[in-house]
Length: 529
Ligand SMILES: Cc1ncc(COP(=O)(O)OP(=O)(O)O)c(N)n1
Ligand SMILES: Cc1nc(C(=O)O)sc1CCOP(=O)(O)O
Ligand SMILES: [Mg+2]
Image 1: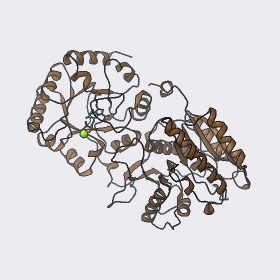
Image 2: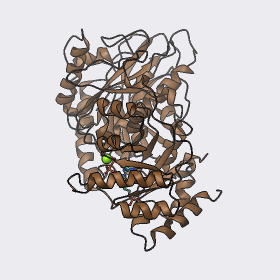
Image 3: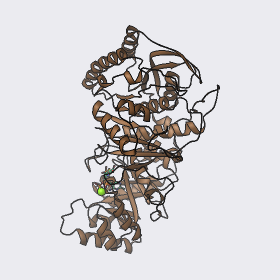
Image 4: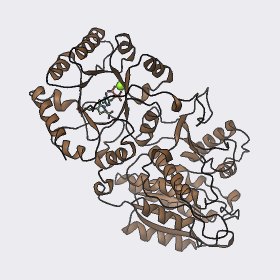
């Protein structure tokens, strides 16, 4: 197994702007431990010192404004952040000072083309129940437009949205209201008791607002992220850990939605391995970058007709449906081609899995091409996948269909399942991998690994470090295929990530001799590492 650590050269710098918890379970102490555990270099800006144990907060003293300002400026000049987590802000003056500082810094970051994620955890009360800040009295609106995500729990959401949360509807409305008020995405945490509470599950609500680098399909959408509840009293510092993990994962270049699901998996694993040190609630363990799929949340988009979180035990939801056809041998080098002539050429040189990808649905020969491709597949005993045109693929009994995230519509998938076609799904992030995996497809493609000119992509190239992390999560679950900019020059580095198969377009279609190019790629792929 490739070691993702070996592939990410630098530790990104992540800041925590928060209060010290002398008990070590939360605040700055939890943040530093989390950031370091998730392979970042952590810097701290202390807003307040608390005399705190696991059972009480005896005293809170905020630092002076000059001290707060000096910490920010001193760090900025030498250790500029790739991402920032903000925790306890002890009073209004601190919020105002930070807002002014962030406004000036963001102008600099914009000028130098940097995008620094700022995650705000609006801490008001410690786990033991004692107040840490004058929560109800604080006005966070000076931070409007300056933060990427705010992570209130249910009681903080009620205070911030100035509303009672008596139903799931009210909870969603409050999160959207807060999102608009601060012009930010919102992760409303349902780990504590709340209207979305049920005994077995912890349901968090993600409201996406102008998120960088994600599919248009997910932009401005809201999602429930659900895990089985970890029944433990060792939960001191959960919110600090979650928000600092989100900042750290974003500092590694992942999009917001990815950072949220990875951070949730990190917290889930930490809760399972939590430990008690004092007389009160114990703390989360630090269990490194999450690789166990069981700790990642199930995701359900909220629609006008269905606002409920996924039921992790019910048979109604996609997660409990049966699997698509399993592919019984490796896909190997998987050509994706736009015409039947090229498809036949590559079948002749031994391609065993191949895709017909005709992007223009108005081509008059579309159905004829699909019929011919499927028939060639039978002649050559090969698996022919049809891209996009799933109704024609069903009609003519193709081996399989390849679909993008925008095509994940339950009724379409049900028809494919009943017709017993194989299904390949695209993904471009952890979040999309999880969404795709919930449908139990035959394979998942990860892309685009390197820059490509074959299609316009809304996301940035993933690169090898991210690919290695995706592989370490999904390896063994189902075949995983890398796509995008792969050719003979970078094949060995892709293979080193342990991905199962690769899909290629230009490396074959733009080769002078596509047959020879296919044979050479196949030989290189089959070489032992
Ligand atoms: C193997 C493989 N991976 C990804 C894609 C891309 O599919 P999709 O996201 O649906 O985009 P289009 O190909 O339709 O532009 C693929 N076709 N094959
Ligand atoms: C069709 C396609 N889908 C991608 C994805 O990431 O989903 S990348 C891609 C193009 C791959 O072409 P090439 O091998 O020429 O770079
Ligand atoms: Mg498609």
